[in-house]
Image (tube, rainbow, N blue to C red; front, top):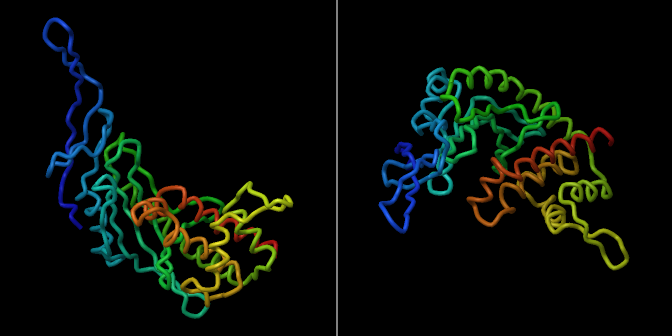
Length: 283
């Protein structure tokens, strides 16, 4: 994956030039995070920020892999190395509605960016459309661990937390089956997509307009990969949003992936399932 490199921290100074006399070099109280292979500055950090080396991220998976619980899948980086990620396939999955399979993965994100935390989470992926499904159980996303850089990376803490979280995949299956048992109507599916993509725009007669992404959702709901599984239900409706997030929204593959995994579209994905459950409960 081209990630066999390390980072170092180098103190940053400011050179102050006066009209007379030699320049003065002042400490900024900050450091540069440097990639050792090419001296590229990945970020400017505080002096108490502890970088996590890429090999530590991969070493984290070693015990899991040796125990037979998972296997390494893919790895890569975004923004020329500022955000490194590794994905391992967990040997836990489920099928629903015949052959609609959801596999489980462990995503380790190692940001070489000041202000961002190491993020380790279970990430289900719907096989038929390669949609990353954001988990929202009990009203909150509780399948992840975040470790800030002000303390040294503690893999044992992360493992203990994730062992608890992995047991909740069964709860996720129950949610999927519940959504697939409740059907939407022509009226409330439009209301649902409007809620996911709100807009204040109105027609000349004062009636609300559909956001363009709500229109896109209505256009693809019956053509997206996997639409045939539990068609006409809230499982199909929620997965329409995740399909757009994973494959359509965003200016590029890089920004689309970052937003789906870490940014605004991840929150949208969580809200899509949470709101779908609310609609299904009212059905």
